[in-house]
Length: 385
Image 1: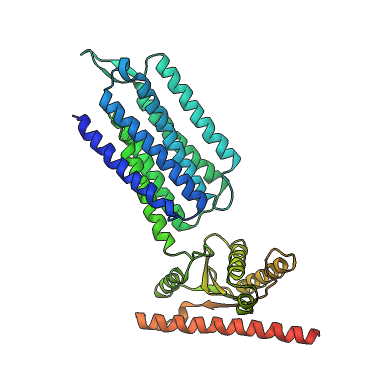
Image 2 (image 1 turned 90 degrees about the vertical axis):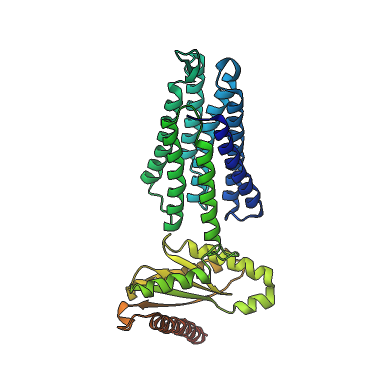
């Protein structure tokens, strides 16, 4: 039923996909540096595993000839699955390293798998003789696939128990990535004579890479926040669907003076520091975007004016403390305006033009709020002198 040449072709196509992804990811197209590095390491492991599988097809499954090669192929299966889990962890832990508990757990999984395979090979359970005088995969084939599926699920349980929060887009992408991985392991439980995992590894890597590129189009290259394109799309979607929401409009005061006095490089470094500071002030599902050169926009899923005012005061306090303690490379101040968009602000006829007009009016209110905050702080400074 399964022709070796067919699976050789599958391995060749899978290898081509992974080679293309490895070359494409060299230029930093995959978003963050640590993720890009782990992604490329995983691709190299996938390629070695695919080459190993191709050699197994070429040499046959006679244990006298290829037992060592088959054993190495089983070990590489575990290494590939664990490298996928490590990559998924780097996507979840964006700013920190992989937690020690998870790292130890993955190492234990890998070592246990190698030990179990060594025992199976010692007792001759990797391959068993058939009545016709040939050989077929032993129970260890299915046992390892089931074991690796449990490893993937155990990692998911760890993150669920740790209550790690991930933004919706990343979580959907990683779920698809892991689902394809589990599907490959599940298929391996059903197909004993051939290795189908290389094709599933290639598909999972392709899906994740494509999703990263889509995400990269919506990020500001300098700060790593959402860009104006993503912000406009988010606001238009909320308005068109008739949702109520709140926004903060944050402007770095006299940012043009920073550019003129310190230079563009120093000003860009300040923006990156300011963006990192803002990221620590909001929830993971709040949309933080760079609106223009020295201004930022935050979309918050709250339509309570008092809550928005409290958040604004808290952010202003954080900016003041960071500027005073030298965390920011330049002691800047920020003007913050907030406003709620109510679904009652929309006209009865909800067409595209009406939505655009309502959004323009709302943005004008936010700009007025920023100007009012800046003016109030100027008056307070003058009165304090």
